[in-house]
Length: 351
Image (cartoon, rainbow, N blue to C red; front, side):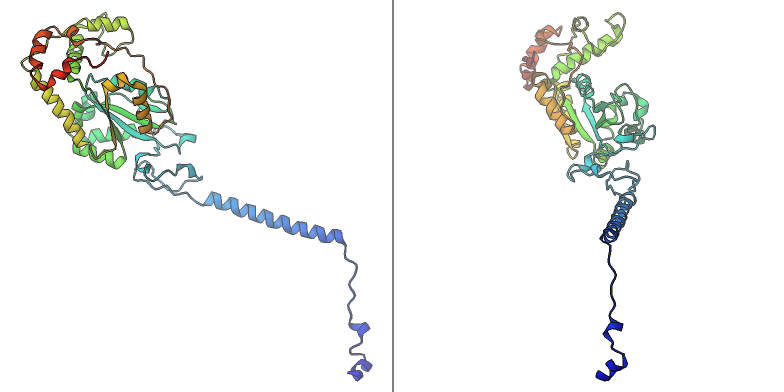
């Protein structure tokens, strides 16, 4: 070792490297540059993933035709128990634009003529987020066969049906009014299957007092031929004066057949409720809407999952007051019904 030192191999002065003076400013700038580069890389990577990663929406509805959206529709996710009853329509006739991810609940008002369904529907349509498209199947061509019926329903629930009740691209509930005798009961199996597959909610609306409904049907039929209001037939009116004119007609009811007819109507209602029992539905009665309108309309809005609003209608009731003032042969009718289970229909159930 000593010899090596003598030969200069391990000369300390030769092998010690002396560092120069380091600039604190340069070191700080270097650290700052490294931090900036890392930050930019992380930011670009995160943004790239948000754009490229698709959000998959799973639904049984045919309305969602693609599961690869270009934006993150996280708000489209909903409670699993309710997801089957909402859809995200993609209309063929217009774009929903910013409302594309607003869920829509399909529904149908199932009723019988002169049961208050027109009045009820106008109240629903006073809600800014609800569109009920009227009595679509009153046109016979639309119910010629079940294929035509289902095709029409697809148009309605895909927001491709336009009339005065249609709202805008942000509708939250869309439906129609459907009478039991307009192809509904004749094709009940296929329609129940469609309702369950598409998640259509049914709103049943009937009258408890079927005698009052019968009087209204007869009076409306009479006005179709006589046109009491200045030669114009009106099933619904918006003034008390018009209501009084229409109510002035007192039909004569066939007393010998009244019990049989009431039984037949009860059977039709029972059959409808039984046939659609597997669907998501609610049952309303006209008398309850009259006596407790606010609560019943709140229940309907909860059923449709739309924000609560004070629903209104301009329609005026035509037939009111005691039944004795609305039938020509009241004494005969009363004497027959008093001996039956329909005696309850003779008593005043609302004003």
